[in-house]
Length: 252
Image (tube, rainbow, N blue to C red; front, side, top):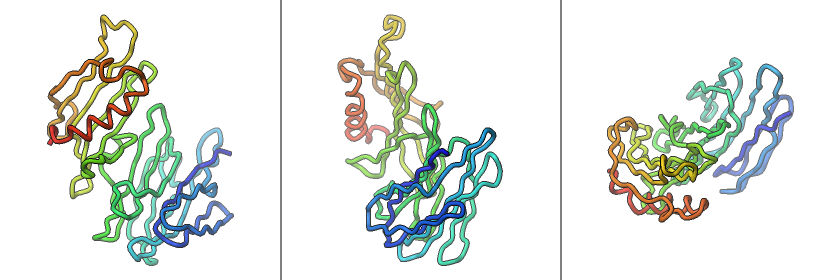
């Protein structure tokens, strides 16, 4: 049996989680993460089975959140607020591995992050909207794996994913979230650090401004020598973080 891990980070006192016929009640203190084994994916030769529900408080409202299969390929998400069903959505279930309650946008409220496992993991997220007291699906978020909020301007976020050559080639993108809960892609970095056949494929960092939220419509604004900026493999994380935090204004 494969564990379907859920991490709860909920601004409430009580979280109630159940799976199958068993039920577990967990006391959850503020901003503490709970590693729950109560959500499991039962794997057979032909399908996975997903089921999870939890009850929690956000913005003085009581919510219940439930996931369950409707087919081999899809799950339904049911959101209940104060005993009233307010939203039912459908997500693809293939590769669905983790569900995490995190404060992604640092607004003091828990959001719901879904992780799809793969060579490059992808993500879906529902952000809590305290104005409407609802969870809103963030459109286009699956384009930006491993997204992190900038320290210098919390409006912006950057992502990372591997692009070949044992992760020596990589991509990082800059985006923000508009008022309609949609991601807007504005910057793109391609790092070509592969040290194989460098005469034909020189090591370089290419930086682009993305126009009209369309990666196919991008303009190169800078090209940097790779080894001067990233002399060893592990230095790329520091380079990416520093570059976006310092230069995000170039991409407005």
